[in-house]
Image (cartoon, rainbow, N blue to C red; front, side):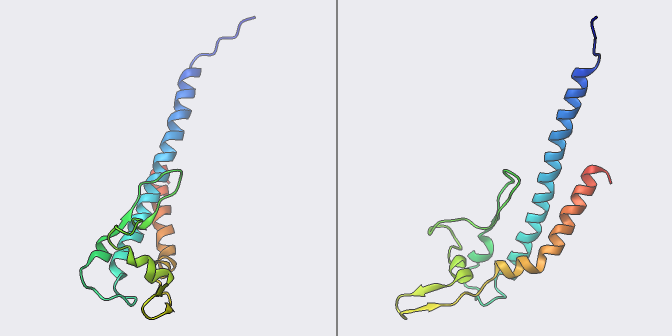
Amino acid sequence: MEIDFQGLEELIAEVENLERASQRIKNRALIRGGDLLKERIEAEVYSHGLSRRSGTAQESIVRTNPKNDELFVGTQGGVQAPGFYLYMHEFGYFNVRAGRFIGPRPLVSIVYQNSINDILEAQADELRKGLGL
């Protein structure tokens, strides 16, 4: 007895296309949430204790592309990167001249906590739009 399946290759191809589409939708949702957070950080970078001098703090906020279902928003790492001092303001630092620890003046954590509901809502809207709900 021989069984012949017709259309099995098309079904497998359709399932693979569905998996790729869901990954694209997920990435678009991550990007939309990341862009919203990036805009909010840029808007509030000088409203939490920093004074505007050169403007590099506002310009140094970047968003990475999604990889392994995660995405990063903040400054690029390294001492030579513009805006590296935002790290010191976020977590505090030891001032050698004064001989004391300068306490943190957080920016990103405050903006993130205030924006988390809007970020989740933007991601949910993108997922609904992508899935046709």
